[in-house]
Length: 287
Image 1 (cartoon, rainbow, N blue to C red):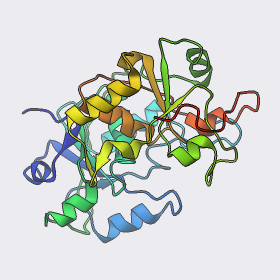
Image 2 (image 1 turned 45 degrees about the horizontal axis):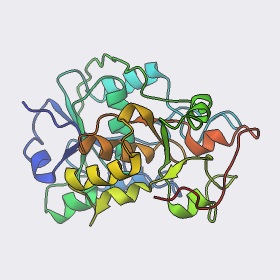
Image 3 (image 1 turned 180 degrees about the vertical axis):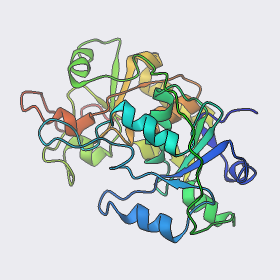
Image 4 (image 1 turned 30 degrees about the horizontal axis):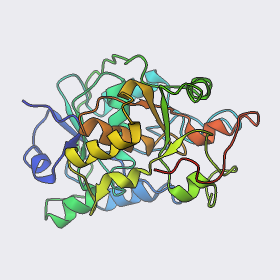
């Protein structure tokens, strides 16, 4: 069986709905109404899909003043969760949401970070599944637990101290994945401090999409090569508000065939927990 490691089309997923080695995870979430995803899942979802709550399943506890808004959970907790969802080395995982992959990419990244490459995001998400006339259900699946064995990938993350040091090295690129308005500091509706990490470029993650689907690998490669200016994946670090939608850029980077870029998991909401860290405003590095 060929593995899907970046994206999967709705018709490809539909062909495997009854495959016991395929695990589907519904990652729908709304930052403004954190239980909206669970309600949507209860009303209708892809048959067989488990539900992953961004705050409860894909993030650890928030410690005010010490962590960002969606810190990575403890690895032991992730292992238990993935095992309960029925994921092991034989499993092809497919994650979807209704935000263009902006939430599902977090699960995609976490699985790959823990050494499970057979994971893909449903291209077009819930909207494409519905518009394609594929089956839906309101019945939760009967899940058989398996044993998830992690193989942590070294060097895939960077913390705030490393990011600050990389900004002084011209061989590295730090990229803010938020909208231009939040990057510039003109608008900030979520975090208590507006602006961006000084020296970071801006590449909003929705730029990877066209009509709700990911652009072609060729188009993605062209836009990221223009952004990186020759810098390889290992020298490129993405961040966003809380380490979630930055994974969308990392997914698009991988789908373009450019390798595995790095993630600053704490992102902006972690950066600003230390008042001594510098903050920039304006449009100094817009892409």
